Length: 492
Image 1 (spheres, rainbow, N blue to C red):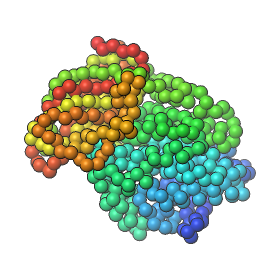
Image 2: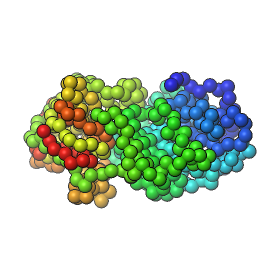
Image 3: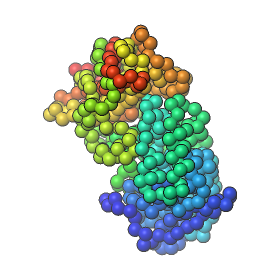
Image 4: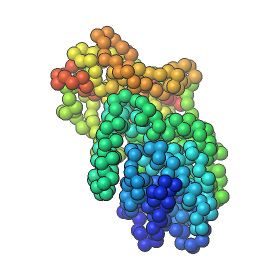
């Protein structure tokens, strides 16, 4: 599939008025017939004219009988107003107004669906929570739902640090738009601790307010995969989950997405939320697994590796880069400095063979004692060593050790009472003491069946973050990984 921008031959300019006098600029890609049709709309801060098939499958949508609309959000592209930072309250309000305006146009049948991945995926959730008239369904792809934990500070470690420079300097936005965006992103959004500025921009807090059907689309190699799974678990409206073998993008095949809109906007096909509403790609078998609802085992399978010494580097420079290959193009991580696949392992621990299907978020548990430092960033990676020796990245986790405190009431548990997912508080950081402390690191979700003769590997790296340029050591007692294995498993 071509990734070049969609042709503007069948594109019409729209100016959409808002209640406060600001106008938003949009492109309309009409259905070939010219008759009234439902509307699928994407809101973007990345310039509406740059839309490509992986951002929005415009040709597939219009051929299926739906108008496609791409909107420059407030303070970006050709729209008016001032950008107030990602996923702002104003932006969600604007989006709800636009949905209602689109539903009333003469070329619209009154039904509207939201589309887009990443930022355009997250804003869908905030708009839908406002329940605008005319909205019929949404399909957020690879979208963050927690502004702090998913986007700016994964594991309390700054992430996506290049985002604002990319979106407002490299993308050719109007110069007058850049100042407010850069001030917010490199000011308020880089606060070290979680707080209200992050909460009001996090769809996780309003998922229960959404009534329309939601299809959560995520990639097994995407840095927002945690959000995809948690969003699906928390949503209360009709829902579907698709977790596939790709990175930070929509799937290249538009069939699943187009069929979603065809059902909710055109009354064609079968209800995609009624049965087999979870589709997960299984690494190792290279096939889709379908279930009704998400499968969670009664208890995790725990693999212990015993006492381990982890070197703590004075800086991140000198780490081996990408010692295990990834199917994700490195540019996907470098463009925003997301860091999903940009680092290597200082130590690699063999976990052996695990029988059964692993599906969900692995948790690394260890008791650590630091020697020579009071804080450090720890990075963990789970990889699959195939029988022929080829090593494949599966998932990663990371945590700033001073942010190890967990809110157990907001964390999820297996039936046996052990923790299934974590909610680190990310407030009131605590330096490492002179004695051992428990640390839990949640990895991004994965889906894998270890082939016979293969095994799992746990890679670990660490760097100090207390302002001292000197190497140190962490001793990890009782280091173990809890794996969500769906079938009864045994270790070789």
